[in-house]
Figure (cartoon, rainbow, N blue to C red):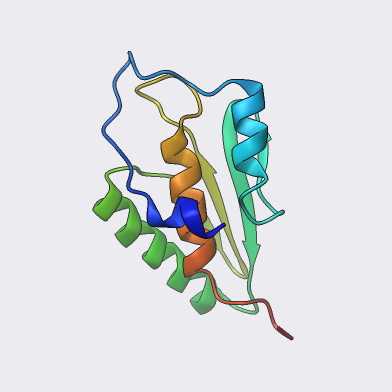
Length: 114
């Protein structure tokens, strides 16, 4: 997980290649097991004991996105944050999506009991 989180996102265009299924599987294996790929998006639902904790990670995600220039879809509610990543400019998943996911894994608080 650590290597991806140290990388930086790069500007993408419609010419940026999307990942093959093998590349996607390999990068997915480097993330927390809660991440899934569905309908061309990298997704994860984070669970929290209250709204404030969910909003805290959503704020961290927003600040990371601004620094990286790669913006996820975020849905925050009481006790959860849902994240969806895809590279719209390229029309699918790129390495940037996995870099952002790794950075979010690092930014998320450890689960209770850890």
